[in-house]
Length: 497
Image 1 (cartoon, rainbow, N blue to C red):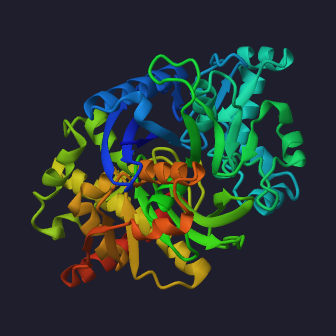
Image 2: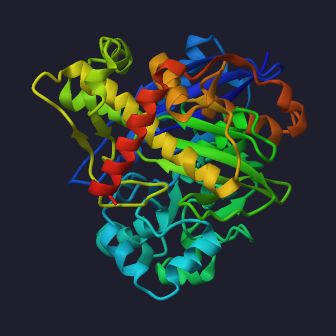
Image 3: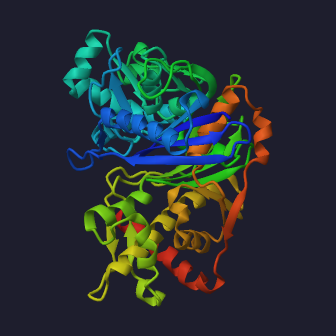
């Protein structure tokens, strides 16, 4: 029997998964969290050696756990946190901590860029993105200007920039494959949507040489083969790479125009497949590459909420009102009378506001507490805040496309929280559909690898997806949710916009 190995390198941890290479059934996974580094307020970093160690550990353990011999691995797929920016040498040695997508240190620089006549419009037209610290370009610029190791390496022509996929590919192939795929490249604020190549005008603006960037390839492609690793044999082909949100839509069988999903991870992200059409948002959404195959580019509209599961982690790690994330649901369910919740709002803006309002300086807040408010009220408000943030994204999708969103496929670890799913359905008045495989980000990378290895045709994958259950709006909650949405919008405008 042969298997596909999927490496899902996420913001808070790495997950290695095994998928049966014959029937594409999900075999199992191993996850390991790694440290988040917060050097200053609004700064977020990762140690690349920690990330690489987590990949080595999870791959080793998943093979051991499911009694799979390394030579049974047919091919490898990679999916990753997207805009997080790495700088390393040509020998693969990290030059600095990675600057994470949530990091806001370049906000002042972004504000300066917005004052340059025509530049924000140029960025949106070329890349589909907003000028915002979220994206990789300003992070690369910051490293070149403020990190001596990076600046020195640039002077010696010994600097390689990349998103996490590029760093992992480089390490897995023994420093031989310096590549990325179009879905990840589209998140850098340096790639032209039309050509799916680096845009020289933007490279000039950010003082980035093209030789410091990887070559952009199809998402399903022979990226290279393993070489010189202690935990995998040589010559296993790496044949699929997708950014995590694109991978989740792919894992949800979102191959066709009109398919949509929402992933609940560290943040929450809604993607709508727009086919070969580049659709520019008028409502604060992003235009991005879904995947590229045989040189044909499929695009998507995206709404990005920076904080979702990370808000629950904050309750766990900072407030310590729960000891593990799954405890938030029973804690919140202690609220029996929703009148107690009608004035309490949790705004999970720990990393600013992304779509559709774009306020990089916003900070998180809990408002409406009284003396009788307790941990359960905060837990319930946290889940509501996640659902209300996503409802804002869905509202922007409706405004841009005219779609009536009757159903929404969901995935990610937080969709195991039944209360959150029920809240989302009631708040958004949408049927929420949860698949049998909720690890759709990792699953999508495995399917991408299968296509890239020639194991299966893309069209044949549509029949694999299966539903677990759906959640429908509770009509008895309509008055409450309507009032809560109105309060959310009024308070949002008053405090944050």
